[in-house]
Image (tube, rainbow, N blue to C red; front, side, top):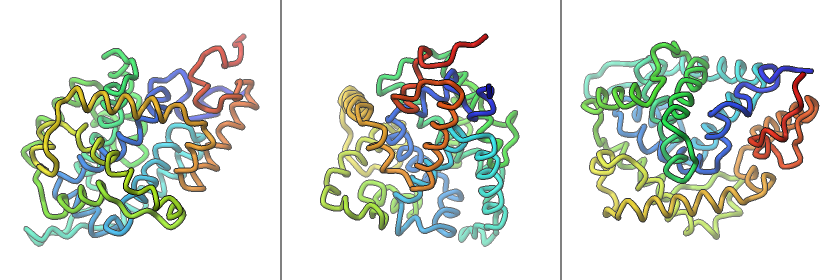
Length: 301
């Protein structure tokens, strides 16, 4: 019988599995992009080296693909996408118009900012939306995410591995953050994105997206919302209730329906993961989400 470590990068008993299988991740993903945009150099890197202006939703789906592979993919899947991401980043540069200097996209400080903005957003939106995690479990999640950071080229010991370390990191980085024209444009795109070609059939429902984008915006830290100043403030309990309602609704969707939002390659990877678990004796009748229940795990000798 294969061990869990051979089947998947982050097994069902990890806190990472509990956080990443939760559908609040969609809010966390967009929130993470909004937060990332407040780092001037990181945002210029995105602006100069991607099609974010044309397809911000596509960036979210590519991020979801990476997160999926370093969570539910096999160790080989994770190593492959890690090599691919590191290779792309190694070849790209960022031109800083303020100084005229050129910077590497794979600068460790930029990679660390992107990582921290993402994983803190995943964790905070899931917990605020109702996922019950103790602070100790939240610490364990951040420690587990050091492994994901290593796939993009960071040294795990340089990455915050607890809530206290994450708070210290954000306190230290905040003076370097600013609202640039690129950041202002990015948040507008994320509030009203252009759908990718394979999702254009959903265009009729696009007006429904704005409340979702606004929910992502309102889950940002208060200091980030003050920097943007895009939408009027609403009471925090209203935001929490809306997030809980979104999470509850999305968590009721059948897996086959929910997975349609992913890229075809991501769906194929998730299907392969499910097959590996089934072959190892797990009960996959309720999909990957069902594996959060230990009763669906095989008996261990």
